[in-house]
Amino acid sequence: MNFAPDIFAGRSAVVTGGATGIGWYIVRMLGGLGANVGIVSRKEENLVRASEQFKAEDGIDVAWRTGDVRDPDGIKKAIDELANENGGLDILVCNAAGNFICPTEELSWNGWRTVIEIDLNGTFNCCQAALPYLKNAGDGGRIISISTTGANFGWPTAAHAGAAKAGIQNLMKSLAVEWGGYGIRCNWISPGPIKGTEGVDRLIIQQGMAEKVTKSIPLGVFGDGDDIANAVVFLAGETGKYISGAELVVDGGAQWNRR
Ligand code: COA
Image 1 (cartoon, rainbow, N blue to C red):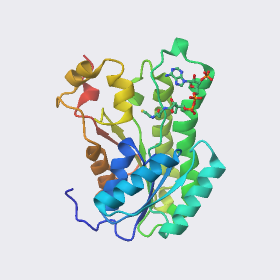
Image 2 (image 1 turned 45 degrees about the vertical axis):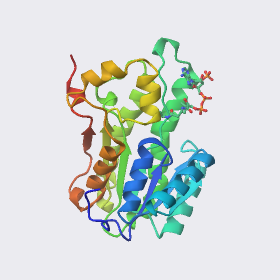
Image 3 (image 1 turned 60 degrees about the vertical axis):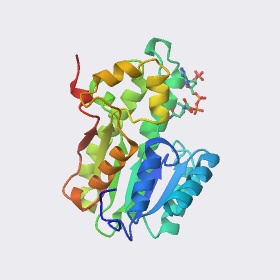
Image 4 (image 1 turned 60 degrees about the horizontal axis):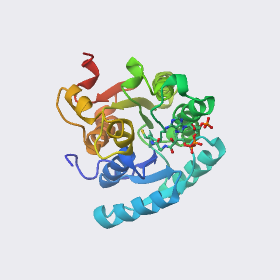
């Protein structure tokens, strides 16, 4: 960790899907830098395991609620409770996502709908629920959504996720304008393949694509979870105070390698 250890002291964050994958690294980083972090995720067993691990390994207490980002009332309740428990809400990280590889020709309506609902509608639900708290955030609220470079180029065999993530990016642009007057900054991070995550396992390794994808990355390796967490800190901290409506790509240069 390369940041001053207390830069988020007195700040509160909610990370959706923060019990696993990239979200787990974001929670650990924000908590390690002094934020009161709350996690919303669907599966209680993941939340219990992660919170025990954060406590034992990093001395970080996280609050958590089970919740499905597709359920606006449930998400509002979870965010209300976490904000009350943690003394408000300064930073919302919309990280929860669902995805699977499926050629569009074979994709059922329900498959399409499910991913759009988790990724795009879920981000909308969380932003709406967090807004009253973000408006009151001490030095301005921040929303950081986790997207993908696939949203910039199309994502063959994951068109559902590509479309949903493109929608998220556009939502962040609109909210940057609409909510900028409240001092809220809205940005998104587009990660490349991050090792050790379910996403890489399911979307790349299980598809037999690990070698091909690695070769396509100019920096030659998959990213670390902390590469994304560092980007969240940059955008959420004082370093990002004039950044809104922007994309931060963290992919080892891969998006420009279209050969
Ligand atoms: N290929 C094709 N269709 C698929 C699929 C796959 N691999 N996985 C799910 N679907 C379809 C289902 O068949 C269903 O459509 P149907 O009713 O027409 O059959 C629809 O998607 C909903 O699936 P279901 O499993 O009922 O939804 P869910 O809400 O329980 O979970 C996901 C949906 C997308 C989140 C599920 O794939 C999942 O749990 N993934 C693990 C978490 C994850 O995706 N993490 C992100 C990694 S990047």
